Image (cartoon, rainbow, N blue to C red):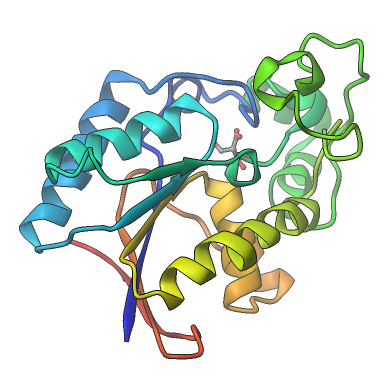
Length: 229
Ligand SMILES: O=C(O)[C@@H](CO)OP(=O)(O)O
């Protein structure tokens, strides 16, 4: 039996301001930093340690993982950062306040944009300042890989290769793995590895900075999962 630890980043400044974030590289709020430190302390208390860590290329996740590894005195382990673990790209919604968007478009439409795995938020155009192609960290992506908007199914398509080609081989080599990512990239990952239905994934809400333990059998099927307390 292997234990895989998944964790969403701590509260970000835009989580706190209730704004759509996506690939915007927003920092952790003060609360977010404290949540991440506490998550590290909790993992330490339960005797967890890791051989390898994976995170996105967004600072709220990178810093959350850093805090956790610092609390475990494990800053030395290899950490791989990949755009494939980024939050879902929220298109033209990025930066907007969620409550104001509800007032403008209605609660039903906004709920669909947020949680229907097949609903696409409005897209940006490549000349938009939010276009990731203008950001150095994505310079090795093909134009097809750079999103203008994304639904959860598309997020799953880009998270999946990272799971299959990078994380699974590490688990098969018996390495102890922690993945620190985002609400929707983790939902996408879980949809794939636990074969969740659209309805199940729609109802799955992942709290910030709460270690989520997945016990896996030899075939990497989930035997059980639970949040660490
Ligand atoms: O804004 C975002 O990028 C995400 C996560 O904070 O929000 P939502 O819960 O709407 O998917």
